[in-house]
Length: 235
Image (cartoon, rainbow, N blue to C red; front, side, top):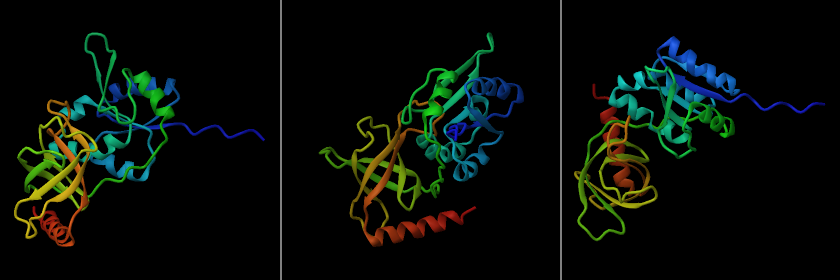
C-alpha cells in the first residue's frame, strides 16, 4: 500500500484584479501551493475561521482602500499565519512581496513565501470578539519606575485590549499595569504584551500594543463586559 501524499498547502489570496491574481496564482501553482481567492476583506475572517490555511496574501490595491476597522479585523490572522503584501512593479510586471511581520517565518519573494507555506501547518483562525471602545488608560510597564503613560484603548475584548502607544520598550512579553479611568474598581489590572505595532509600520491601523489581561478582579471584568455590551449595540 502506497503512503498517502501530503495535502496541498492552501493560501488565502485577497485580490480584486483578475489579471493580477492570475500572475500571483501562476507562481504559487508552480510551487505546488493552491490559492483560494476572494475579492473582499469582509470575507477573510469568516473563511479563516472554518478553513485551515497555511498563509495569507494581500494585494496592495485592496489594502490601500481598506478602512481602519477592516485592517484591525485582520490583526489576529496576520499574527497566526504567514502573511505578506503583494504588489506588481509597473515597469517590469515583476511581483514584489513584503512580509507583514516575522512571527511565522520570513520571505523576500513570492517564491519563498510559497515554500514557507508548504512548511507551515495549516490552521483555522477564529477572530477575537473585539469592539471599538475608547477608555482613558494609565499604561505602565510593571518594572518601570517612571510615571505611567496617559493613553487610550482603541478596541477591547473580554480577554484584552489594544492600546495606543509609541513606546519602543513595550515588547512582546512585557508585563503591564493598566488602570482604566472611570471603572468603579480603580485598582491596576495586570496584563502582558502579546504583540505590538511599531510606529511607521505600513498597512497598520496605528502604533500600539495588544495586551491580554492576566489578573483582573471580578468586578472589573463585569463592568468591562457591560461596557462592551453597550458599545456593541451603538450604531
